[in-house]
Image (cartoon, rainbow, N blue to C red; front, top):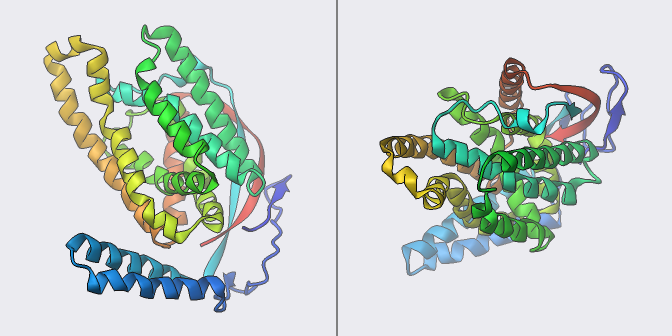
Length: 347
C-alpha cells in the first residue's frame, strides 16, 4: 500500500516508500521470485490433479478454474505496475435524511423496495471496510463512516414515513452482519473486497437506460465507491488470500442473487394486496430484466478484479465518477469538500 500525505493544496505530491519505481516511467519493476510466488506455482500444479484425474465434470471444472486463477496470479507477480496518484476527497454531506430518500423517480414498487433494503444493509459493508482498512486508508474510512451514517439517517427518515419499518428485512440484516462483522477478518476481507471490486460496475451499468433507479443516498454512495474502489481492492488484496477469494466466490454470487432478486417477493409477502394490481407483474418483469444486468456486471467485476488479478481501469472509474457527480448536481444534493488525501494506487 502506498503511503499517504494529506493535501493542503492540489499541487502537492504524495510521498511513497516503495523502491520498486522507475522514476522516469512511473512503472514498478516486477517482483522477484519469493515465497508467495513459489506457493502460487505449487498450488497451480496441485490444482491440475483434480482437473486431469477428476471423475466428474464438477471436479474437473473446479480444478481447471482453480489452476487458471492461481497461474494468473503467478504471472501477475512478474508484471510491471503503473503507480497512479489517487486523490480521495472527504466530503460533508449537508442534505437531510428526507432529502436523501428522494431522487428515485421510478414508480416500480419493486425498485423502491430495493432502495429501502440497501439503505438498511449497506452500513454493514461500510463498517467492514473501516474495520480492516482504517489504518491504511483513513480518508476512505471517513468516507465509509459517512456512508453508514447517511444510510442510517435515510432509513430512520423512511421508517417515520412507511407504516412497516422494514422489519421484513431484519433476517437479511442479521445474516449480513454475521458474515461481514462476526465471522473473522478473512471473511470480512473476502466479502467486502469482492463487493468493492464490483460496486462501480453494478452501480453504473443500469444508468445506460434508467438513470433514476436509485435514490440520492445510493447515488452519493456509489459516486464515492467509484472514487476509491481501486484503493480498497488493493488494500484488501494485500491482506487477503487468493485461495479464499476463489473458494468463497460462490458465496458472494449467492448473496448478491438474494440481494438483487428477492426484494419483489418479500414486498409482496408483506403486502399481499399488491398481487391484485396488474402493474405489479409488469413491474416484476422490468425489475428482473433490470437486475439481471446488475447481477452480471457485479459478478464480472468480481471475477476480473478480485478472483483474477486483472487491473482496474482508471479511465472507466473516472468516467463513472464524473457521471455520478453530474447526476448529483442535477438532483441538487448538497455537500462540500472538507479535505483530501492522495494515495498511490498500484495497477
